[in-house]
Length: 158
Image (cartoon, rainbow, N blue to C red):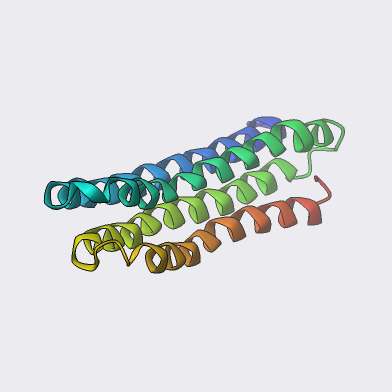
């Protein structure tokens, strides 16, 4: 076979982490840009800006969890299995996580940026509402992690 199942599985885990890193980077950049503008107007909102701008960071951790699970749990099981396409299945599971974390992180940053931009106008009262709205987008990242673990489990690899 051209690609070993183990190398395809590692690629899936790496893509999951890469998706989390990319989504978090985009999200934090969007929120940080709004934060810089907000802090130029009202420096007293620094703590609130930090809270909202850091929320998209969690998608990186979800991607890392998928990579760690694949390396520590899936790879040993793959080594003992016949080459029946399981490596491609794990790669597909990694792609589920990669897309979920990338889009969740990027769009969570947009929600946080909107909340950050309204901090001066509301004198910080929008913080809790903005966090609640950002949590809805966060849920997609959590579901990406959960669905990836479920898919690996249904394949008998977790």
